[in-house]
Image (cartoon, rainbow over all chains, first blue to last red; front, side):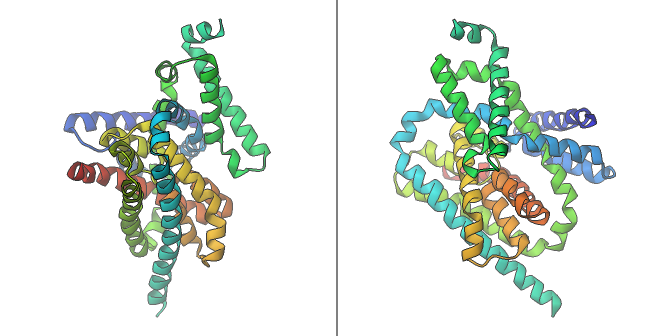
Length: 119
Length: 233
């Protein structure tokens, strides 16, 4: 249970990100700024197992944290029906195409860079 | 009676949500991780059914469970940890991965928005589709920033991740994608956290690169997209 003590560390960076966002009026999500700050912090301190463990625990329960926002979809049933074709095509079609391309393209780039390295 | 009780004691809605989550998680694990029983999908569906049955407004519900929503941002911040731990691997493959990230970072939102625009979708829908391939906490932050509907974004993002998780093994087979880094990286690029969970089931290396791609994609998109959108809309 020791990892619980490290959760507030993430919250400190989260709130710092929010504060910085508000202070400089940045159009980037506060959590993103918090994540960057934490990343810098993690390079300064020596690697810490408890922080890794705390992050793993928190990320494991990610599905729970989605629920409040996801439930809000119940407010938009009308919009969803109105634009359902566009939404379906965009979500299904573009996701499948992009994924196939991403997999092929990344493999192509990796193989290319690996073959130049071994030459 | 039940309705009044829940309305007046918001803590009960919080407990109810936690219970629904535990049930959804158990269901997923006992079904041998059947992709159709993803805890996010089951959880959201169950809560919506309960709220509808008990006639509770979404705004009242959200107020009671705001602490859970708060932790979504905390989890986003925590994504810095796997990014830090896999940093040596990023450096090793920096060049091909950066190019892949740059191209997909533009192509994924562009294709999603253009296809829906072509079919005549509303501006709000377009703005909600743009962040569909980035992890939900980032995507919700971006949606709040650019003016999409956060809840619609959450749903779109979750469905996108689930599609990638479901099709990945067939795509790898039919398109001869055998490179573990390419498999992981592409899953994380397009299918964020939900696909990353499946990538870890393939191998640790595949999972690590999926987590990496998810972090990089979320980071770059949430920084770039708000600027991009302010030029176009």
